[in-house]
Amino acid sequence: MNGKTEFLIAGDRALIIKFGDTIDSETNNCIRSFCSLLERKRIEGIIEVVPTFNSLSVYYNPCVIKGEKLIKKLSSLLKKNGNNSQGGGTTYIIPVLYGGEWGEDLNDVAAHANLTAEEVVKIHSSTDYLIYMLGFLPGFAYLGGLDKRIVTPRLDTPRTKIHAGAVGIGGEQTGIYPLASPGGWRLIGTTPVKIYDADRVEPILYKAGDKIRFESVTEKEFEIIKKQVEDNTYTVKTVKGER
Image 1 (tube, rainbow, N blue to C red):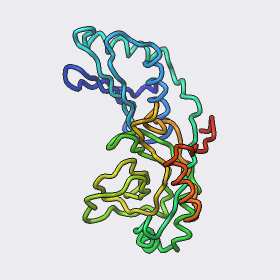
Image 2: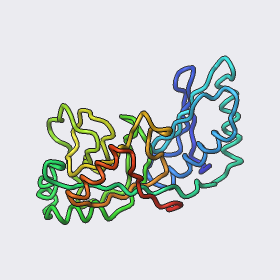
Image 3: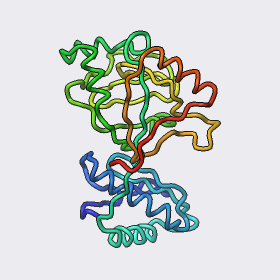
Image 4: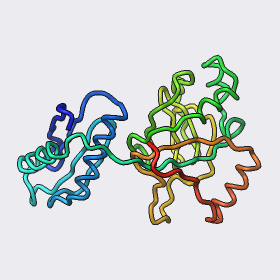
């Protein structure tokens, strides 16, 4: 696809196609494009394909197709697919109540950045973040695009429990905790939106290749949205086809 792909053996049931050594939107776009192609082709023996920052994991049944044969098929598809890119995804507008009890580390992030809390909120909510991959927890999105001005180290001692919906910064990344879990990121806010809901037809709100745009809301707006989410009457705002 880009002349830099490399096949790695991951046991007797998986292959890893490495698309490069860098983490950037162009490489990730190629990965997602090829992932979509494989999902459409439905090659017999392939069980699942999982995109990551700069590689694609391909899980297969060795009783149906041997690894060597699969590598040949995938190599051929890579050559034919060329540099085709994935189409525009969906941008999800995620409301966030910043600071206070819902974002207890906001002032620490501001102090580290030598900014005011209001400036951190403005910077954080002024970017569309590309979802490179999902992992760690169901629906946990690894996002690209955090402004360098608010890059902040993780906590020296992680918390034993972070509430679902917490929005945090950890090093050069920002993200949302979809479920309650331990974690070491600096919490700057909370969204009332359910990122993961096992009762939904599509449990995870978004997918790799989509984008997230954080929108600052007031405490009153937060409570209204929270009640709507609980009543299943809230619909997340989206923008289609942006890249």
